[in-house]
Image (cartoon, rainbow, N blue to C red; front, side, top):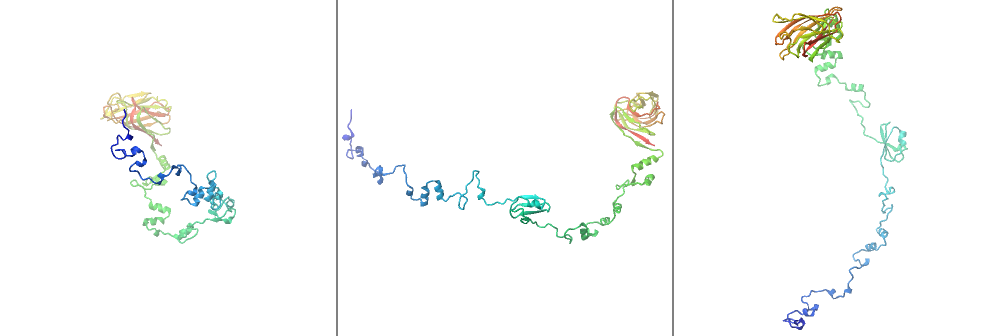
Length: 436
């Protein structure tokens, strides 16, 4: 089933030739359009009247280019362009220099450069023989001067110019010029003691003295109550023994001892005890008498006896037979250990097995304080007498005396002290030898 067409006019309801629809709907003509835009004259032209999208123009058509610009654009090649721009490579004025393969300029086009070198030479011949150029410097060690080369002729002496320095010489000292000697300066200065403004009267007096008088002026003699300078005693003063300010030399002391009728005791090396098993002493040959001083010799074990032994073979064996007869007493009471004993293993010089007559070791007990006197005439038996005090194992104060007889006429070389058990815990035994 079909309806009427637009062309037949069956649907035309108003306006226009055909009814309600616009005329262009029926004619299709551009001119039947309403509200058409205003078009320029180009719209009326044929397409052939316009240039293609891709096209060329000669340089002369570039309206805003100068004549030089058009000439540069139409040059045949780069060389022609450089020529037009006057970019000519070369080394003449106005040319452009070209870098070499290392990217550097040829030295022939660079101005001469003066690079100063410094040479140290020790004489004129060495300076003139230098390979040098203008501006180089030669330091002459023989003259203590420096020269600079003013040309490129280092062999010409006149071309070496001395470098001058400001004068550093002292113009004058105390009115003196030139080389000034110590004597001339001393004479020129002529400083007197009175010119030293901060010197005391004693100081001024001192500097005018001789060395001997200076020493006498400033020394302070030492005395037993004041420190000072100690002077040596003369032999007369040493012999008289009356000076309180002069001291004797070692020789003067030795001469004094030798001149003494009874001699003097000289201390040997003390035995400082610290848990020692024994205290051994070498008996010096040729000594008239020996003494051994006990100072607080405390045993490590409580309730022990003091033992003495002797050797005649330099301490290899302590086996000399010894007899003792000791007496221990307290408040005038003599204890029972007064019996005589003879032994080769060590003789008791104080104490027995009882607490009242043995040496104690408690912290409040002070040990043995005693002195033993030993003597052995040549070829005879030796004797010792020992006496002193101690605290027994009960803490009481005891005294004791004990004669000792050594049953040998051989020279005794060593003396040993020990306790009957345990060590010598502390204290000191000092040997003294009589210098006849």
